Image (tube, rainbow, N blue to C red; front, side, top):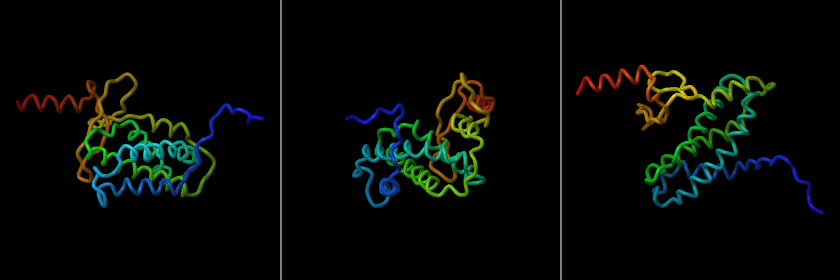
Length: 186
């Protein structure tokens, strides 16, 4: 006799120990082991899988979280979506950076999953969904709405080698002023 078919696939169980082992390798990619010696393709695949597994779990719990932990969860979920959209690149250094970013997000998601703080009834699910889908221009801080053209950008930062974000390509007043200044300088 065969088991009855279900209409919905059950999510894979969260194996916290395996996730910890994987993100630890990702966090140490610059430390104990040179990036070229890590099996980067396998590591990146595992880290992406862990993030993809944890995002819906943390999203479901985030609607029940309160205060700063909720705001932190939303930030981490949004960043996780951005990382999943990004390519790891081809150079060993770029791949190692991407692996480390995925490892940090994996660790943050697992921490939020295991320690969500006091939970209440679900509220503001639409707020979470809106935050996940939102793109904001790094030049003018205005939302990029559906249909507007944009590009991915890498911003320099005092605290980081680079922060990924978005830029309007045509409709941004701040970006237009920057381009006019560049043309005046020529």
